[in-house]
Amino acid sequence: MKKKISNSAKETERLGYELGLLLKYEPKVVILLDGDLGSGKTTFTKGLALGLGIETIVNSPTFTIMKKYQSKDRLRTLYHLDLYRLDGEGSDFDLEEYIDGIGMVVVEWPYRVESLLPKDHLLVQICKTGDDSREIIMSCVGYPCKRAVEMI
Ligand SMILES: Nc1ncnc2c1ncn2[C@@H]1O[C@H](COP(=O)(O)OP(=O)(O)O)[C@@H](O)[C@H]1O
Ligand SMILES: [Mg+2]
Image (cartoon, rainbow, N blue to C red; front, top):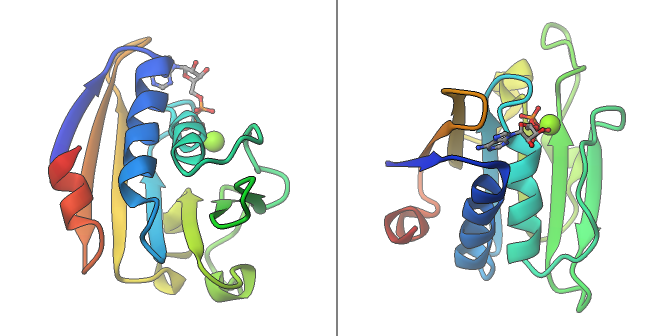
């Protein structure tokens, strides 16, 4: 578990960027982003994408559930999901249906469909502590990313 403090949107994006760099060569990583509306989940994801070498601007996929991004060399894929609009009860959402092949999966509002999410993941919790300040807690759940979380 690692706790970081961010004092600006830029700092949060930078943290995402550093994590993206550390995870760039992992074949498949699922990152669950937990935090209130406006806490900085999408900001963090923008940084992750940059770290993976994705140059397309990442913005919120709120109305589409999932957006897929690829690095210029097509070697890295980022699947950005926002489950805010999903109703957990009775939802037939299946993460696997959205994801083909290898890539990083980032899920905003993951607990809408808790039971269908992979048990092994990297959990990033963003907590708003002031207008521009955030507490960001990263923890490995299951196998992945232990090294990345230690190094960041
Ligand atoms: N330290 C910070 N980290 C992240 N965002 C911040 C921070 N300080 C201010 N902000 C602002 O908070 C908002 C976060 O929005 P966004 O990333 O879309 O949140 P979410 O995806 O969690 O709803 C942005 O307008 C951003 O500029
Ligand atoms: Mg968002």
